[in-house]
Image 1: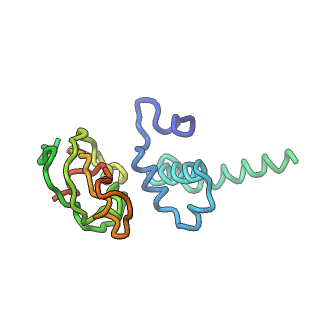
Image 2 (image 1 turned 30 degrees about the horizontal axis):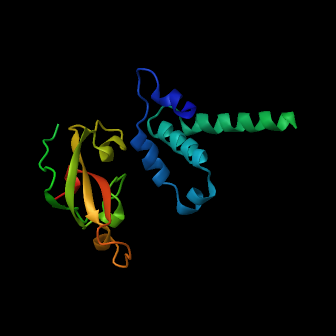
Length: 75
Length: 93
């Protein structure tokens, strides 16, 4: 699964499947119902990376803003 | 690794407990009586692995067989119907 190769692959294990499940279960029922299967994965993996200190919320916020403006410049 | 306490055919009861966290034991099966069908092996404790801990010592995982009629009070199928759930040893008593 491509989504997980960046965090599970290689010698340094960055997350477990149980963390993936835990953070999916932590979604509110409303968010859970609204999201698609892999949207839940993305949110859960992101949450795990923040919890483990691999990325900070600051970095995440900046990157999201950057990607959004990239999309806007295309239209 | 924690040693296996049960063998196939043994009668067990699933703990009726509701702790927080990532628990693999389904809610609907907690408190139910069943019979060990087989030992599946030993695995890292998922409740610990979900919290960035080692999951050691590994815990025996069993396939436990329950009678559908006992699990679901309004079950209308055959009395022979069973349900099998994989449950870690620390959830059995």
